[in-house]
Amino acid sequence: DIQMTQSPSSVSASVGDRVTITCRASQGVSTWLAWYQQKSGKAPNLLIYAVSTLQSGVPSRFSGSGSGTEFSLTISSLQPEDSAIYYCQQGNGFPYTFGQGTKVEIK
Amino acid sequence: QVQLQESGPRLVKPSETLSLTCTVSGGSIGIYSLTWIRQLPGKGLEYIGYFSYSRGPRYNPSLKSRVTISADTSKNQFSLNLRSVTAADTAIYYCTRERYNYGTAFDIWGQGTMVTVSS
Image (cartoon, rainbow over all chains, first blue to last red; front, side, top):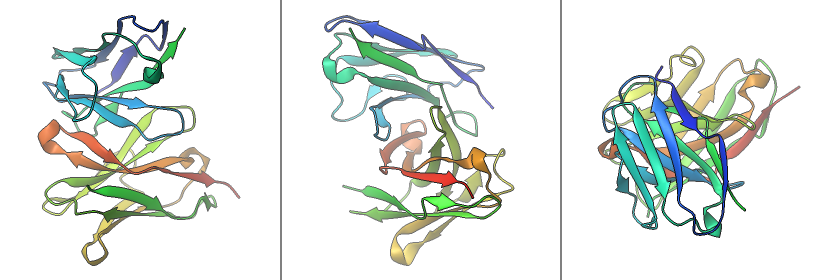
C-alpha cells in the first residue's frame, strides 16, 4: 500500500495566519491527490481534488500544490471555522489510502 | 443533489457479521462508484472497498477475505457485509461517492454510523 505521511500532526495558529500542511507519499501518486476537512463529529468534506482543484463551494483561501510524492495544503488566512482535522488521500494505487491527519487549532 | 445515508445495527457480537446499508436519495450513483470507508476510534481513515455498476466490486486486500459489497438497484441501496468481526472492527462506517474523474476522490459522504463490536 502507498503510505501517506502528513506533517505536522498538529498546528496552532492565530486568525489571519497562513497555515501550510505537508503530505508525503511513499511512492509517486501522479496528480491523484485530494484533501479533506473533518470537523468534530462530522464526516470528512472534500476540499481539493487532483492536487489543486477546489471543490465547489470551498473558500478560495484554501489551495493545494505539489507533484509526485510531495504535496501541500495551504490556508492563506486562517479563520475560526477552519478549526478541524485535515487529511490527504491518494487515488493512484489501490487500495486508496489516507494520511494520519493534521489537527488545526485556533490560538 | 445526491445524498447518502447509512443504516444498520450499532452493536455486533464478536465473530458475527456486520451488515450496513447505504441508501441513495436525490438521484443515483450512475457512472461513479459507491465506496465504504471506516474510521477507527481516534484514528485515521481506512478504505474498505467499492461497488461500481460497470466494474462490480473491489476490496481492500487487507479485508478482502471478510467483506462483500453489493447493490440493490431497485431500492437504490448498497450493502456492506463484514464477516467474523472482532473488536478491531469497531469504527464509524461511511458510505461515499467515489469520483474517478476527480482523480479518485470522495465528493459525497453519508453522516456515518458508529458500529461497536462487543459481547
